[in-house]
Image (cartoon, rainbow, N blue to C red; front, side, top):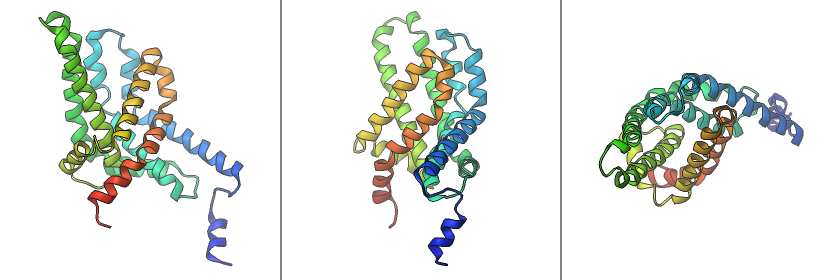
Length: 230
């Protein structure tokens, strides 16, 4: 028996389109469950907070568990095509344990900065000239979120020092403008869905992670070519 035949026998996923489709659905369901579990504190806080501008900083701080989950999700989605077993939780949990500290090193300062910006946005009405500051604060917040989107992918796909990853994220923001626009699009859609219904956003978390991993392929290829040894 050839090595290829033995590999096909050992594979838990059949070669037919129905088997492949069922495996994809199963993996996405598992991804959704894992994302919900790892983001459970965020889910609870968002459901309990009233929709009031004064609660915006608290809502931002509640997103602390989100970035590690996103990093693990992107890593898992990228690992699935290489695996022929039906244990999609393994790459997620492996990446979550491996990258938790590395993610928090840049995510905690980013969340604190976003919380300060959101506090200022919520109280602009009490500041003279607040209408002038509004677009400035929004632009800064948007740039921080775009940078975080790039850092999620860099943390999930590469083993880099935090400062090196931060520099690459800044340096590639314009050259990889398509990916930056993709992150911005996901941000806008996610914010719109969140304003409409938190439940719908929770049920579509797997889709946002999958789209982020998909749109990040050219970005990952460019970083691999420019910043890693071949």
